[in-house]
Length: 102
Image 1 (cartoon, one colour):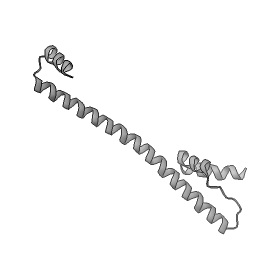
Image 2 (image 1 turned 60 degrees about the vertical axis):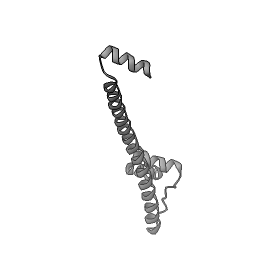
Image 3 (image 1 turned 45 degrees about the vertical axis):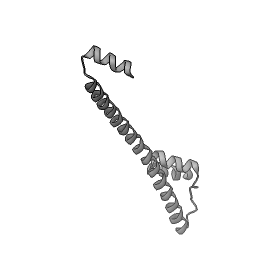
Image 4 (image 1 turned 135 degrees about the vertical axis):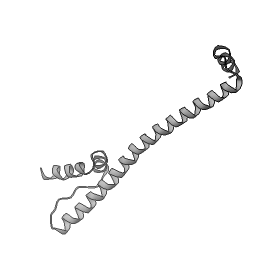
């Protein structure tokens, strides 16, 4: 670390305090970029989980209402249907019911 600090001080004409200050500023910038990146990725993951949960709830509710209405059309709640609703959302749930009608 001292070699890098000495090289910066010699080549850029900075004092030791300026080098430390610049390193702190650079570290904070990298930290802000990482937090921003993680937040964006987390929102994608959170959206995926929310769509999966809402889609599963819609499938459950639609199956229940169809059963009350006397219609024997029900989409099973399993990994494929949950993944379809998580990726495609409500249109994916409608797609699952559409496939059952074929």
